[in-house]
Image (cartoon, rainbow, N blue to C red; front, top):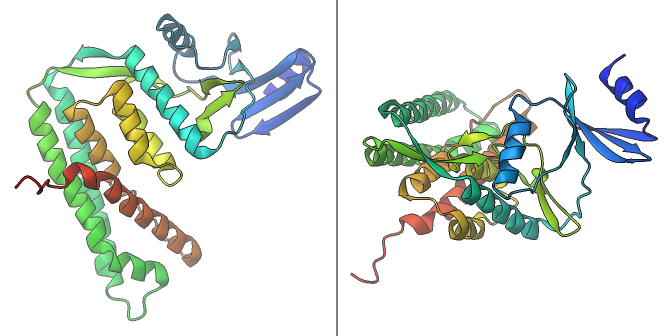
Length: 299
């Protein structure tokens, strides 16, 4: 008997719907969500959140199965995205502020972060340079290749900015022996936020862990940079659980890393992917500009 058949015999649903990685069971005694058992210790995480007076997550109804957990089903009120972004960032700020603490770290901690990001930047610079030199040999460029070559300097400038900021960030932190840690959701997106009957919820905590809160905002930016006015949301987050100087610089470095652009034999898909990545670069540049403009009014 497979997992679905087993659950059907146990809960006797009159309807079930497979939605992504979840199965929604509609039964006479209520609705439930079935998901594969996560890698993290979700029970301990939820208990910890409750101890910090943070209960904005679905209740667990059954967690004694070997292969899956069963959660309370929460119906989303489907509020408009701008309002949803405001409520989400408030909830994330609350999560971080309620669970933050300083952790002692070794001298290797920041060096490993530095080296990992540095290697990623060098890889991306080499990756794009090779494509640039290859596409320049074309007599007649395809639309995606033309867009890439025309904007190569913009891509390279974003990576140079990341590299310069990374070196400055490391100068800030290399002598530090502590780091601010929070419980982070680690998979933030608009699709993982629900408002139901006036209460906000974060769902899909499968990747939750204790780490720098920078990662949560970075992933939210990556997932929803186009739908959200991030300048406003970032300022709102800062009023709730402000990043310190090193955290802000690390966040700016991470979002400035140009996502890898894939070129395939499907020209339509390549052009669409190229346009999306360029939009990411331009929007990120606009977001960062106020933090790096020199104030000449007082000169």
